[in-house]
Amino acid sequence: MLQGTGSDVGKSLLVAGLCRAFARRGLAVRPFKPQNMSNNAAVTADGGEIGRAQALQARACGVAPTVHMNPVLLKPQSDLGSQVVVRGKVEGTLKAADFQARKGRLLGVVLDSFERLKAEADLVLVEGAGSPAEVNLRAGDIANMGFATAAGVPVVLVGDIDRGGVIASLVGTHALLPPDERALVKGFLINKFRGDVRLFDGGLSVIEQRTGWRGFGVAPWLREAAMLPAEDAVALDNWTARAGGRIRIAVPMLSRIANFDDFDPLAQEPDVALTMVPPGRPLPGDADLIVLPGSKTTLADLAFLRAQGWDIDLMAHWRRGGRVLGICGGYQMLGRRIADPEGIEGPPGEAAGLGLLDVETVLLGPKVLTEAAGSERTTGAAVAGYEMHMGRTDGPDRARPMLALEDGRRDGAVSEDGRVLGCYLHGLFGADGFRAAFLHALGGEASGRSYAATVERALDALAERLEEHLDVDGLLAAAG
Image 1 (spheres, rainbow, N blue to C red):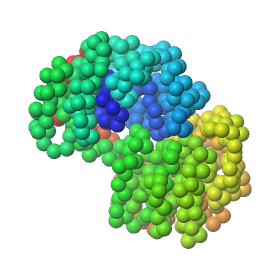
Image 2: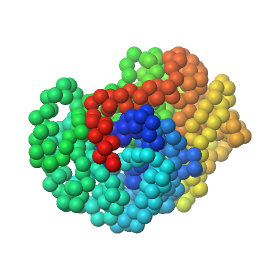
Image 3: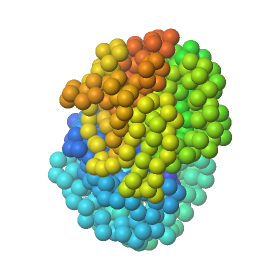
Image 4: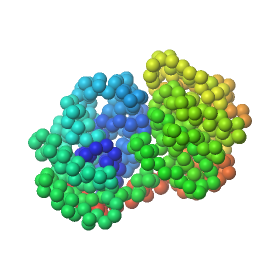
């Protein structure tokens, strides 16, 4: 089990790289994260949803993702509460304090899913969440040492040297762990080192001397990470726009933005200048396309969008002849009205939409969780992805659907002039043919690269870098 000295130390990426490294050695490998918190989720073939990171890790193993790889998923809906998903299905919404009081009852579910994965694998790589040093949250813990102790899993700690204080974070974690949990730790590794790793030899010695734990190596800054889907919206804090592309695409960073990896294939196109616009900044006036992304709380994020003045920017863009695309929650916002009569995403209520599509949405269950494929109706280009939403959308513009799906359904809507489009399908830009046709319609050209092949090459390169810089044999031996 890889546990971190804090959040965002790179555990997800390291597990993905090690999954691919061990799979390349011929082992049957499975990823597992007992408890995740993320609005970046993926649909599984068994009809549930799990964290996007675990879906990527499953891909690194060469297997299809299942709900057992992430049995507890928390999807934040506000600063105080989250939707709780257990084995892929929504169980309800809890405030953070209520979840802390109830999480211990989920340990049995977590251990059962772990045992199912163990039964089909030579090796299970477990990813922790947050830090085991958060002793104030230790009671009922299922994410770190609470799970490791119950399952008898050896632990390796990950420290992030890029943020600074890595020696103190590892030595401090050692000091805060009780003796029985400290004994589960087989060693540590350092992540995100920039420059000559030999410069940290003295630091490794200090940590080993102070803790008695062995070092498994120093992983460099992994540039391959830029080609892989990020786990959570924290990655957007360091977003850097690609300069020089002819096609200017802007995406407002909503407060509860979800499944923003929809845009990864666009970001990797040389002819695209993709800008993720943070709060406090206007949407660029020279954009060719504005995309409203998915949201975990559509009504709240519609209010957030208006509070930023982005609705004014969007309407000005549209009046100038610009194009607009909405995906999932963004599609719902483009309509005339959104209603949440049962309070599925927050307090019951409704609001006027942006009015660029003649449709209305009512947020009702059950939640749609399904993989889907079909074609974009204007170009006939193939698309594939997944649906993950609670809303039901209808109205006159639905007579012009954006997508025709293989199961006979029609998804989305297109405005009468063709400049405003919306659909529920996440992942559609991962389809190379559709992406090429879409960019051509905007006046640009696609690179011709296969996005799927790019991800596979990045996973292979990641595995090779970890084999080079970490004691991978030692990690396998520590796993028993």
